Length: 118
Image 1 (cartoon, rainbow, N blue to C red):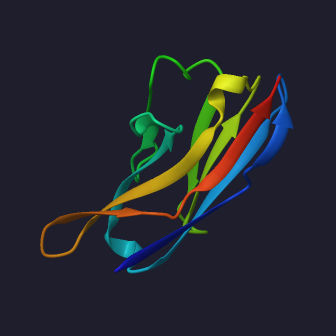
Image 2 (cartoon, rainbow, N blue to C red):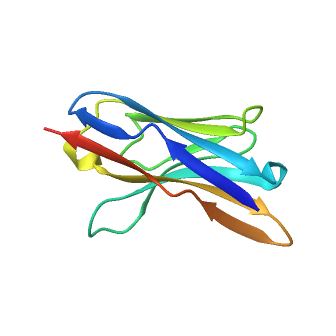
């Protein structure tokens, strides 16, 4: 089992920055790729960025120039640096880990709220 806990969310004004963290615990050695997602009220959960255990990254086009994903394997942590936040970035942000345990399993954190005021 893998447990994920997000932190760092909050209320900010448009144009400001936030850094989200995702702390992994449990069978962390089984984790390969990790990613950040978000879900706004009434909308589907959407992918923001992914990062492999080797550090390769991919971004959704709509956040590529403003968000940066990173990972510290020694600390079992993943981060999302968000710049120039907009009101439309308001959502619950989730981290996900893909781990191998007798097959590939997805693990999700409980989410952290980010609210951007105009």
